[in-house]
Image 1: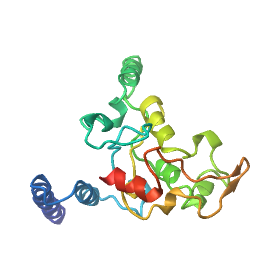
Image 2: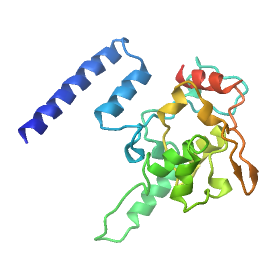
Image 3: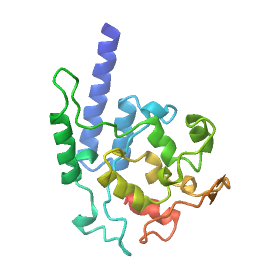
Image 4: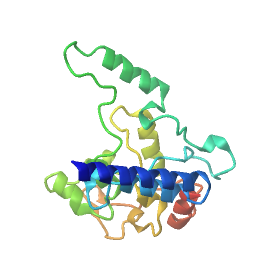
Length: 210
C-alpha cells in the first residue's frame, strides 16, 4: 500500500511539473495532453484505455480555415456531451424521468471506448472491426467516412459522444486513406472525406495541430 501511495505521489509531482512547463509555454498543447494520457495510464496498446484528445476545431464546413477567428474553435469549457444545449436538455430530462431506486446517469455512453477507436482506425486496422462484429463490418451509415459528418454526429446524436484519438494530430496520416484497398458489400471503401479547407491529409493534420 505504501508503494502505491509513493507511486501516486511521484505521478502527481510529475503532473505539477509538466503543468508548470505547459503554463509557461515551454510545452506544447499536444505534448501536455500526451503526458496527461500517459500519467492516467492510457496507452495505444490498450483500446479500452486509448489516449483521448479533444475536438479542438469546430469548423469543418468552410472553404478556408481562419485560425485567428475564435469562432472556429470548440468550447473546451464544456464536455462533448454538453456542446449542444438541445441535446443536453434531452439528457437532463431523461435522467430526471428515471425511476427512483435505480442508478441515474446523464450520458448513456463514454467519450472513449474500444468501439470508438476501431471506428476511427478502420482503414488501418479493419481486422479489429471484423472481430468486433463477428466477421462483418458495421453498417455503412455508421462507418467513419467524413470528418464533417462525424463532427455533426458528435454534436447532434444522443448515442455518439466520442472525442478524438492522437492520430488526428500526428503525421503521417495514412490511416485516413484506404491504402489496404478495403472493399465492402457497397463497394470500395473510400478515403476519409476531409474538410474543404484541407488540401491533403498532411495539410489536414497540420491544421488540426496548429
